[in-house]
Length: 109
Image 1 (cartoon, rainbow, N blue to C red):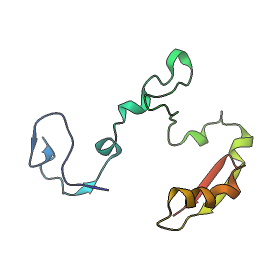
Image 2 (tube, rainbow, N blue to C red):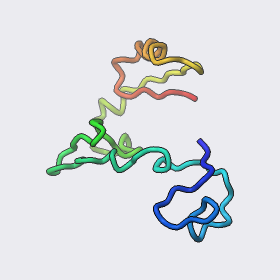
Image 3 (cartoon, helix red, strand yellow):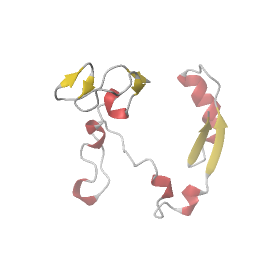
Image 4 (cartoon, rainbow, N blue to C red):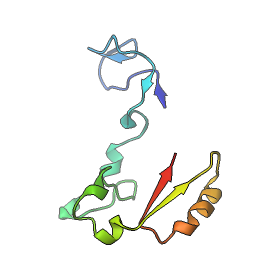
């Protein structure tokens, strides 16, 4: 997704934050430009345990599968799938159904 204006809570000039006036527009939007990322973390790690977020969904860091605490049974239960373009949610569910027992499903581009 391309951004045609920076997203900042302070003074901007020509859709760019101060100091970035020469930044080329449009640019690849960072996640926090299009999603309310603080809501992802809500009460995460509340009382030292993994909690639910304000969205009601558990969130993990992108490379969590590389963490040595991930059980080998999870790391080794990998299925690979390729999805066609333009599928609706029902078609995606149907295409992934054969891999329901896998802990991890890698989806090819």
